[in-house]
Image (cartoon, rainbow, N blue to C red; front, side, top):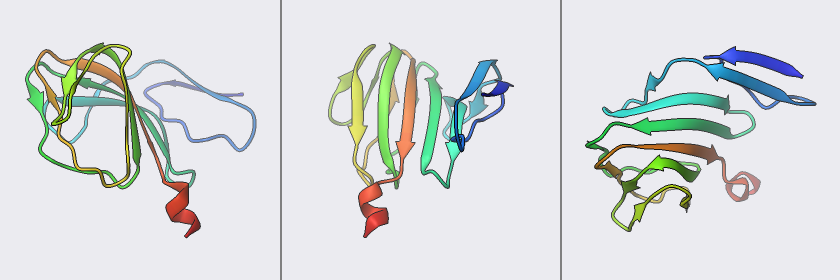
Length: 122
């Protein structure tokens, strides 16, 4: 098993398992008020998994991702143009789906991005 210390970022292992131990600093996401802890980033495998934290009052402009986006809300809440989401809610978005995010009170979520295998097969 490959073991990394907090702050490192994993890739998908060729075989067996990999573990990322606790630690590491929150990093700016590129959008003010949103912070990430990358857990896995592997462009070749088409996988990104992050913890994402938002400050109270943080919001993003309308945007889209090339990948499938999956969000599991751990703490707090956020909303988009469709609904509000809280702890235990799970959201999945199609590649290219436009959305925005607003976090009145802040939130913590597990966010996963995956390449769409259907588009890679075409």
